[in-house]
Image (cartoon, rainbow, N blue to C red; front, top):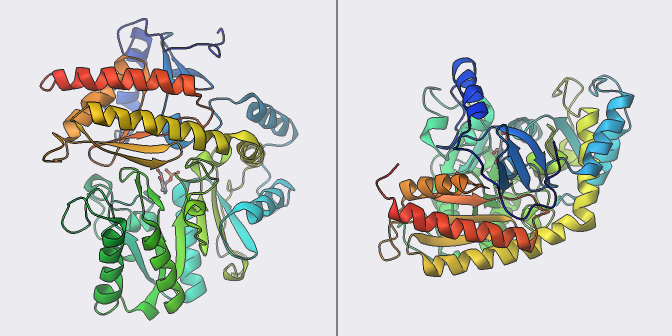
Length: 456
Ligand SMILES: Cc1ncc(COP(=O)(O)O)c(C=O)c1O
């Protein structure tokens, strides 16, 4: 297949999905679990290169989702592919829980240097975001001897049963699974666009005050005695909940509360980490230090890796307490080390500068389209919230879905997050030229979706 590296625009050549895609979608419908939360549109990839995805019918899409915020170095970055190939020729697996290989301490040492945790750290290796969260939950219980947790509404921390007890972004994620496994109490997240209690637009100070007050003056005095609370788990920028950055005063308020009561602050950087927000970790925007940081998604450019990095003193657990056969797979770690090198070399900076450019362009579209109620985010983690009109600010999930579909028809890959938001999470290699093309298509798609209110 010829390279699409120099392409300027998407190329849609068939009806979508095309005939080859159709066959795969049918087989998938028959044999694959229907529990995946796929969007209205159907994309079947054959090949990925940089910001471009070619489907099985030869249609080429501009990818502004990056496999849900994972392919941060772009699809198949040649240096990552080379690192994967080289490691694959040496050994594919040796079970780091029982044997040793240098890649594990090498990555843990690098994380010790860059992860926003005060003082020396240790790292536990797993395979996914939800497993990184499971590790954090077990570690917090083990280290504090406590078992209550505080998490936030609209948060997403994964779908295994422990992590699911924290997750609260959609009822469908919990429906049918009975009572939550862990003792987690949820608190409204300080969304400035929609006040946690009134739903009105508000200030960062007021939103933060409302959420912190709820913890200190309501929960601590009623159902969650602070001396029984093991950890507060938070995303600095809510991901699946709609790409909502937390206010600075809120996160510092959580840090203060944790310090006052011996509670651990667990920051979930699974989606917001690895350069996504224009800094290596979202915590850095806030000068925030966590006790435990969870990492996955973008860490290994598409290979499965989930990491829990904690203050070294917390990882005072005995052999056998927590381990995973595949956790810390050597090929995934080789990809991670190369990914971090590329991020530090140029891609974190590109995420900040092209991300700001993209956000500026999206803000101009907000002025033009009455259906865009809010544009927010950091770096290349940007949310665009759709409303029926700016006067009422009523959420419009149908419009969001139509826009998502209209983008797909025009060759732009975007996905929703939350109820009525489109998330922009492109590969961090996106150029201004790519951003201009994406913005032009997005603009057209919004116009088309607006004219097409009753079509889908
Ligand atoms: C913030 C956050 N935490 C945890 C997870 C779970 O990660 P995974 O799907 O790899 O289990 C996700 C996935 O979207 C996430 O966005």
